[in-house]
Each structure stands twice: as C-alpha cells, then as structure tokens.
Amino acid sequence: MRALAYFGKNDIKFTNDLPEPKITAPDELIIDISWCGICGTDLHEFQDGPIFFPENGCCHEISGEGLPQAMGHEIAGIVSEIGPKVKKFQVGDRVVVEPTGTCKDRYRWPDAPNANQEECAACKKGLYNICSNLGLVGCGVQSGGFAERMVMNEAKCYKIPEHLTMDVAALIQPIAVSWHAVRVSKFKPGSSVLIIGGGPIGLGTILALNGHGVTEVVVSEPAKIRRDLAEKMGAVVYDPMTRDHDESIKYLRSIAPGGDGFDYTFDCSGNPATLKAAIECLTFRGTAVNVAIWGKNPVSFLPMDLTHQEKSYTGSMCYTYHDFEAVIKAFEERRIDEEKAKHMITGRVPIENGVKDAILRLITHKEQTIKIILTPNNNNELGDEPEQKKKSQLIKSKL
Image (cartoon, rainbow, N blue to C red):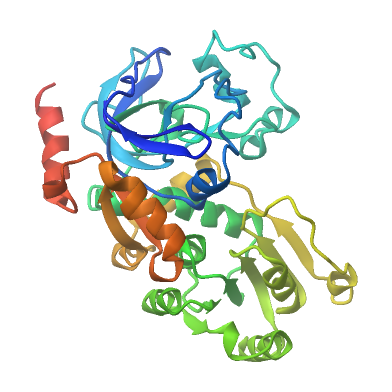
C-alpha cells in the first residue's frame, strides 16, 4: 500500500510498497485512514532519529516490529474490517486512535521476543500512560496513520460524533495530551490560567480548558501567527519579546486576576526560560505543569522558587482512555467548538508530498505553520468532507 514511511536514520520517504496491515489478534480492526496530523515527535525523528524507532531497525520492545514503518499517530479514519471478537465497532464507523503501545498490548504480538515479559509497575497500577516501555504507533511500535490503512486493537479506538469532520477528528489526539495535563494539574473551576507557548499543544490546551468550562485564558507566545490564532480561539495574548524576562514576568503576573500571578501555568514550549516563567508567573500555592517534551540536557533550577510560596511543579505524559473519552464528549456537547479547533490546521497535504510540503515546511517555516495534516486520498479529495462521509456510508452499505 501507499505510505510515508521511516526506513532508518535520515531516511523518510514515500513508498507504494509498504505491506498491507493484517488482523492477527481477534480484537483488532482495520482502519482506512482519512487524516493524520504531524506531531513534533515526527519532526524530531526526521531531524535527530531514530529516537523512539528502534535504533538498529529491529526490534521494538513491545511489538518486536522492525522497519520500515508508516509514521503518524494523530489518526482519524473509517473502520473497513473487524476481527471476530470486536464488540464495540462495525464496518463503516468513524474512529480516532489512542496510539500508545504498552505492556498491556503485548498480547497482540505473541511471537515478539518479549511477549511473555511481566507488566511494569506502572501498568500494574493502571497507569499505562507512563509505562516503562511506552511506545507510539507510527513511531516504532507498529505502522501508523501516514498510510492507506492500519491495524489497531479496539480498546484503543473511539467513535466520534456524527457532526465532527474527519480533519478536526485528527486533532483529538493532541487535544487529549492537553486534556490530560489539565487533569493532572487537579484544576479547580474558576481558577486563572497562563499558557506558555502557542504551538499545537498550547492551542490544544486552550480547547481543553474550554472543555473544562474555562473561557478566560492568557497565552504568552513570541510568534505572531500563533498569537493571532490563539486570539481567534478566544485567548488574551502576549508577546514576551516586547520586554526582557523580568519585566515580562512582572507584566504577566499583573494581568492575572488579583494582580499577583496565576493559579495554573502550562509550559507547552519546554526551554529554560519558559520553565522559569511557568514557576515565576504563579501566585502562592499555584501549580505549574510541564506539557513539553524536553531533551536530555539538564537545566538550572532553584527549589526555593517553589518553596517560598508553596508552589507546585509537575509533569504530564501522554493520555489515557479517560482523556480521549472526555475530549470526544466535550466535542459532542459543543463545549469544545469545532470551528475554533479548525484554526489549528494550517495545511492539508497528500502523503506523497509529506516530506517536502509538510515535514520540511514545519521545520523551516515554524513561525508560519501550526498543524499540517496528511491524507492518503487523491489530491482532488483534499478537504472534501462530504467525500469522507460518502465513503463511510458506502462501506456500511456493503454489509
């Protein structure tokens, strides 16, 4: 089948010859891909990888799978085939995918070298989002959504509301990242919020907070296009480049209700300056949440910045089924506005052109792009939502 695949270090390319996915476990289903978003993780794999992909081409800790693999884990598609023990889905259902691979998924690959390994401590406690062996579909565990089709177990698939378009459905995964961060923060209604960084996860955090009933959010972001989009999504925006660090902190604290800092800050950027800002912009007993993925280099940190006002700092990793179900319900109940969410999508590209027109563009034109989504459809179908609905109805009619 056609796919944009990872073949090895510095080797990502379009191919017509990736093997078709097959149902091997009875609770698996085949999904025809409608749209799949490009994540920052995909860009890191392109520039610096392999990171999550197996370094020697084989084999992944969970699945034993090797390369090449179709990339992509922000997935929306239509069920085209189901295994004999699938209970929640039927052919033609429109779904999104929770793309993690953990100890709990080893049963899908009984011939893998580590198939019989005991579950890690986190998975035993049900905290599979922080599994010791955590991996991603489309990033090492198995082929993902930059392809015509993929296979997934039904526990990691979710039906989407009828009114939701398939391109916006592909945003549910990154919004689930943000939803989990809000949940981890133990957010209290009526609290004040600052988001640091207006990229895809920062904008997704606006939507996640909307889903929690929050309408007043401040976003600090240096790139104009990102500030503009955050403003369109209802946030108050600030350009931190207009003042030096200390003056920016002073200003941001002053515009919070009460003029003494925010109850919650979410660092969606991930550099030493934003870590410092996330803590310094808090009011007393406020909570800062790191949502960003950092590199391996340590940063300077002063514990008394937390201790003096009994502030808290925590991290948020991935998501669980709770977050996917909650985001979908928020879309269903219109607490997350579909039109607001569409502002995040700044490009739609066929998988054949995925490297040149999408991945490289996101790297070289970072200040002009937010989220580019890929499709295996023909060029004349790009953005044609009625065609996607016709496809779902056509598949159902064949039952």
